[in-house]
Image 1 (tube, helix red, strand yellow):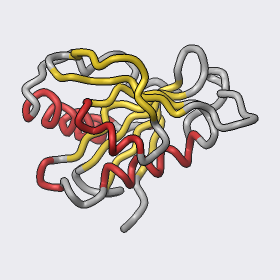
Image 2: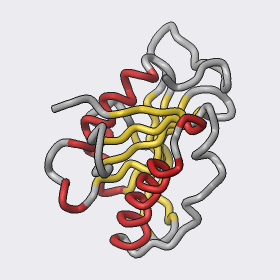
Image 3: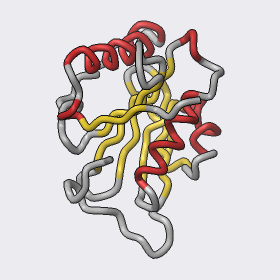
Length: 159
């Protein structure tokens, strides 16, 4: 299987941005029936990273990587098109994103049913489950690995 594609937010051409946003809306808003404000002003920022697969053609899986205000990273908007589920695309994107962040701290808000999936990448639940847009979530964190501290935000683009 080929490697996922990556682009910083300020590198996305309009047609690709549209395709990535459409995949997110198809999964989260339409399929999961969870209307929420997906457009949060962060997608086009230079410090936002976008990963998708396949590298060419219509995106079938997607993940967004953000810098956290206090340092470290946040993973979000992880989704796979319904017809592509079971092919390991979510894991492929997670492995690629985790390789990019290295030993830095990473946090995400997982739908509670997906906790075991994220645990495979070193994430542990934190706090209690909470409702986000009608779907139960839980914060999960992978702490910075020993001897390393998170990069301050804006100090490095997620490349």
